Image (tube, rainbow, N blue to C red; front, side, top):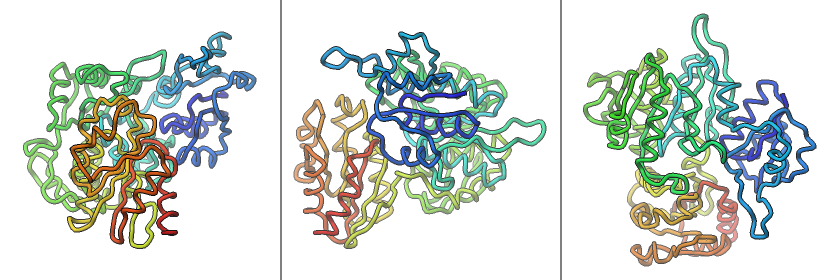
Length: 463
């Protein structure tokens, strides 16, 4: 069929586009303000991208419109629709569906789905799990909300399964809503046989009223796992304990706690994997941070459910290369290193800064450069947590353009360690003026951040 994807440059929809193309469908799509890495991946696949959401795209006459959750019924100040293509589709009575629904019906049917859910670490853990299965020769399909560097692509259909087995498909299972016409979490469409619940805290204040509302969606996910399935759960999280207490009909495997099915002994870069207290494997790798140690345990526990021994899974992680935009080094000038990271929730910011601190040691300076860009952060719901999230940074620079709250006031507890700028050029100027040889500049955003990484590298080279 010919599908036309609205919001094709989102990480999920871009991955779906790649899968549809690989499956032999004709794929076109549109979006506004496209940026890497997804725009690069789509162009490499030969998928036509149309800028914006104009109604003239009806002339493409696709068999199905697949609608991303960036699309809404919003109106502009003059009363005209923000997404005229969507309005035209509805007026004409043309067929449309959501990305998760299309995926469930056309890709996931008949497969053993391994879904990774959680507020943080979904992309990294999904990538780890896919790599473990790949190293074991299982040729999994996958859809990741980023680009795992071991694979160089965010999605693929995967290879055939041995006789009598289902093909494996690993998917990042997002709790954000499906579409403007389907307010359930994306992950309820996936029907996993193996479900990872990595962690759970309040996020997405634009669509969830409180933590209990998100816990309810996670329980809906648990309800879709069959009796022969496995739920892998982080035993350190009270919120997930509540989710399981609401009912669970599958095998449960815990990780993280000292007394759990899977735990770790040793430092995050070199540790023993313990299965019910007994040594079952060893992970030695380049990654830092306790969060990645926990991600590894979750991936190992999930892989075991499809027959991969923990020792083999741990060995495979030794060659895991992480994901683009996860403490990714973008360049180094005058002994000053610039990193890119996707962190945007205060907990993720703190985890990322702490991970870099473990990597570079206490003697090096970290300059944290961030923009509160997610819908939750734009609302200011978690602004009070920002000073806590930036504790390990020597200096913090906030891009405050477009915020409806006072970033200077929110960061005031940090005193002179925090600077606020209203434009990208201003933030580049401030960071370059403060930077010294040996510094580590950590840029954090869930968007393109105005190309700040390259602008910093260019300005540092000129300074």
